[in-house]
Length: 211
Image (tube, rainbow, N blue to C red; front, side, top):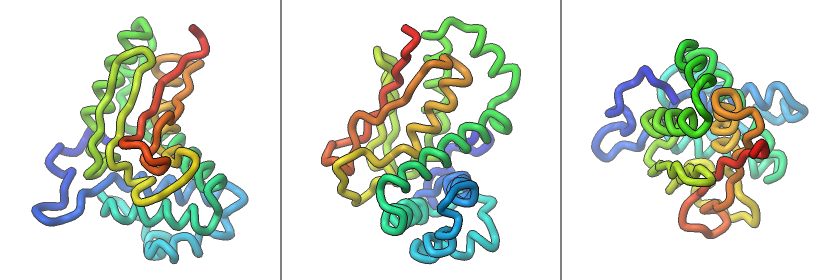
C-alpha cells in the first residue's frame, strides 16, 4: 500500500509476475522478531527461499510469489494458528507504517472529523486506488454496503492452500488498523470467506460494535 507509486508498476512486464510492496516482507520479519517465534525466523525464510532478505531487507517492490512462499513457510513451520497470529501482527504493523508514512496528517484529521459513513467511503476509495501495492495479480474490490466489504480474488497469502479456517489475517488486520484509527475505534474486520476454505473469493466484513 503506497500512494507514491504509479499504477503501472503492478505487473513486472509482459509474462512477468506481479509485484507487491516490500512491507509484505519487512513487517513479517518485524512480527517474527518481536514474538516468541524469533528463533524460527531463519528457518522460515530459508524454507521460503528468502534468506537473503534477512541480510539485505527489500527496499523495492518484490515478486508476489515470494509473499506466497513466505506465508506457506510460516504455516509449515509454525502451524496455522501461530502463522495467522504472525500474519495479523504484520498486517497491523503495515497499518502503522501507512499511518506514519503514507497517509498525510491533514487527511487523517479530516477523516476523523467526517461522519463515519462518509469517512468509510473515502477510506475505501483510497484503499482500492492503492490496492495494486498489496494485491499483486489478485483482483481487489470493495462494497460500501452494510456491512462494508473488501473482496480479494486470488489472495497471495492463501494461494493454493486448503484450510478449515480463513488464512488471510494479514490483510484483515491491515484494514482493521486503518479503519480503527481513521473511521471507528470499535470496528472489527472479519474474514467471512476465504479461498483456502473452498470459497470462490476472500471476503472481509467491516463490523462495528459501536452501533
